[in-house]
Image (cartoon, rainbow, N blue to C red; front, top):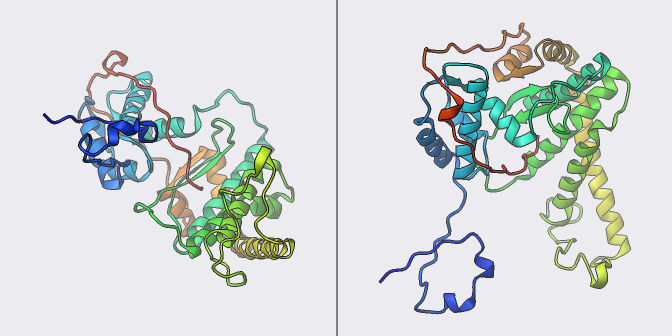
Length: 335
């Protein structure tokens, strides 16, 4: 007799179940990679009546960390979008809207935003996108939008070209510069500072501190680990210090130096490409969302092409043919 069992909480299993002679083989099933997500999406896409121009590879690249159930939910949400719009097929626009909804929540179309604030958001997101495209070794920008979703007024979306198992120093430094791009754009073109960059600062600081204290990516402080996660909290919630005050001061100085260097790099790129920034903002104010093709046109000094419009075939699609599942996607990667 062979008994097969599955669980997603192996840490709470009774030790008696794991004694020799019981469950002798343990197979770890992780989340699918890009190729696996593409194959899973193709299985679910076959259930739809019709799809026009749907790129399963692009969808797989844009859904890192998704499980099979979450990918099925993505396909269902895209079909629901198509049904609500009385469309005869499901296209990439529906999938993009479904992915944005799962990541950040539905569009807040009823939100009234002043024109000045919309333009400030456009410059903020354009700053992120410009730095991301001009720095080497970064993930390509998939799209930029100033459509409010959830708590965000705008998003710059980058898609990795392949699965990333390790992070490297050069890319992490570039990601820090990208995070600073939004604040710098507001400062340069609007001559104002807003609270919209607070999360960017927080993520940049955490990344730089981890590079110094955990990953040994600082030439000044070497390869020693300066932060012990296990001893970060002492008894009764009190902090437990593992390094001296003098060393802590050196860590802070190195983190600040790293952040300021990337800030200067991002500022130089933005100040040196002001015409492209203005063109990107004009496109965002006109269409609210620009994709990679339009972004490439702007960076090449050309007029951006109009948004892509998909044609639909005469195939009936109704809400009754679509099932829904409850699934929460993983958090967004750094953008």
